[in-house]
Length: 251
Image (cartoon, rainbow, N blue to C red; front, top):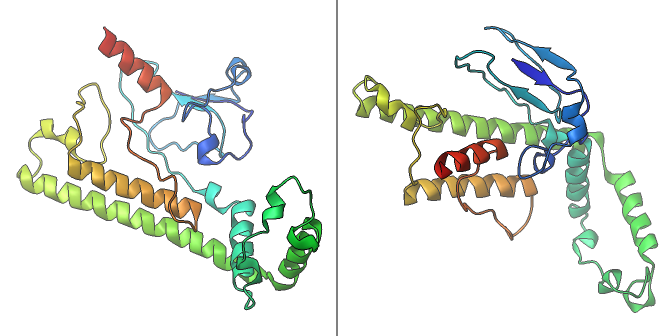
């Protein structure tokens, strides 16, 4: 049984702006409104949801259900992402290296919009940047940036697929063909069920997970030295699952 509400709290949100995740609450006015879609999906049905729409799925009977989510990373090829990347590449490609210089310190002080040395104002510098971009940025730059982003996601999917195939092959070899059904919850990626068990990750597993997390973080941020890299501080779950877990252990 699916419910989809018709007003997105944040229009076309980025991953860190999605309500119901990362500690961001779902506004009460959204859940108090009547769902725009309420339906029961049957085997073979497909439900399309644009980015950012609040939704929930649950079983109406005492039975389990399973669905597969196919997500398209439209958040990574928004106009702002494609344009900002293409503009940065255009500015950095200037042979004079004019736009690789650090901005004057006066830009961040109380001196106002005048830049250091009594030279041009910040408005003049901004106009110079815009003029250069207008003259230099081409549609082909946007096309190239978009293709690079799509290729990056495709490579990530290929790596995940290969990693899953390797885990599955090792599992089948260790269990003699997978006859031991009790071992299935430990195959990665895994599904959480009523029979699932939680154990502490080994040092090797933590190192692998941290490497993948930091790689994804750096890819999403583009250029940089990696300041503020994410850490594995514990089990990361959705708010509802966390509340249920705390209640279960408290009991």
